[in-house]
Amino acid sequence: APPKEAKYALNKGELKYSDGGMERGGIQATCNVTSNGKKRVFAKVGEEVSFEVNVEIPKGAGELVNVEWSFEGEKDYPLKGLEKTATHVFEKKGTYVVCVRIYTEREGDKNAVFTKIPNIDKMVVDVIE
Image 1 (cartoon, rainbow, N blue to C red):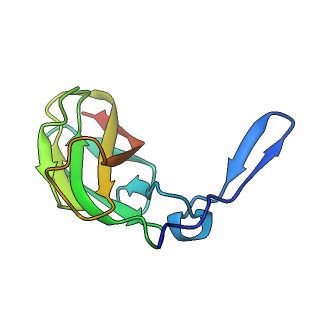
Image 2 (cartoon, rainbow, N blue to C red):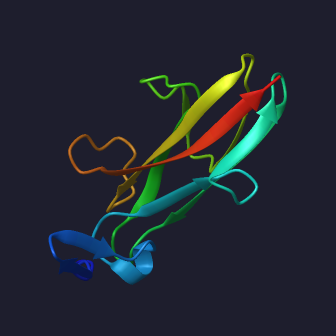
């Protein structure tokens, strides 16, 4: 059976919908990347930082087939696989936007070319000396 239609509201030109994929419905999973449950963290240069992504897939919308991580603005998302956790060491002081991109596919086909559904989330790491 196809997934339920997405639930959303349009209020004065602003689209509002639930943060969770199960409640929202539709075909796109939701993702939320954090470090120790926070969207912004501070770390020292050379310190290992742990990240986790929570993925919620609406019923009937398929399976998670890929998780990609970008820690320092890399456009090719160098860490790819199915891992929903990752670590990274920042070697220079600065503010970094860590991004995670997920893909789901209705049949769970990791090799599908045209039917993967992406979503993306980000968080901030402030690296100090």
